[in-house]
Length: 190
Image: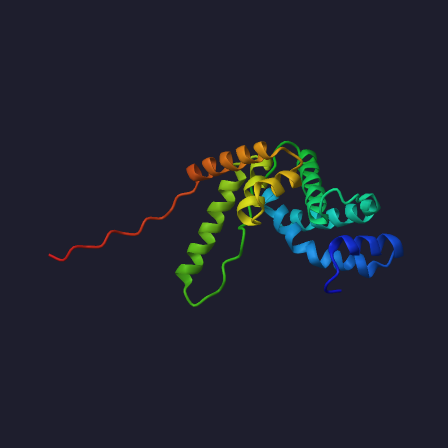
C-alpha cells in the first residue's frame, strides 16, 4: 500500500473494517512506538507489552480519530498515555532495580569494544533511570526520535515551553550522571 497515507489507511479501515489496513498502520509504526516506550520503562518485556497495548487501544478508538493532528502525533499521544498509566499502576517506582542494557553488545571481533559498548549502554540506562518519566520521555522524543519540540509537546500533550524546559532539565541531569571516558595522555619520549 505504498503511496497511501496514514490518514487514508485510517479511513479505509474505519469504513471497510478490513484488518489489512490496520495491519499496515501497525507495520509502519510499531518499531517507532516501541522505541519511544523502552527508554521510559527501561525493560524489554514491559516495552513489548505496552507496545501491544498501545495498538489495542488504537484499534478500539480509531473511529474517534478526528484528524486535528497527524495520525503519528495521535498515536504517540496514546503511547505516552498508556506508558504513564502503566507507571502509575506500577507503584511510584517507575524503573526496576534490574535495568536492562539498551542494546546488547554485538559479538564483534573486538571483545574490548563490545565490553565498552555494553558498559556505555548500561551507564546510559542507569542515567535515564534517574530521570522522571516525563524527562525521560522528553529526551527520548527529541534526542533519539528527532522530533522537534513542538511535535514532542503535541505527543506529550503539553505546551512547547514545558517541553523546552523538560529537554533542558533532562540534559542537565544526564550531563551530571554520564561520565565520558578520557583517553590516556600520550607519553613523552625521554
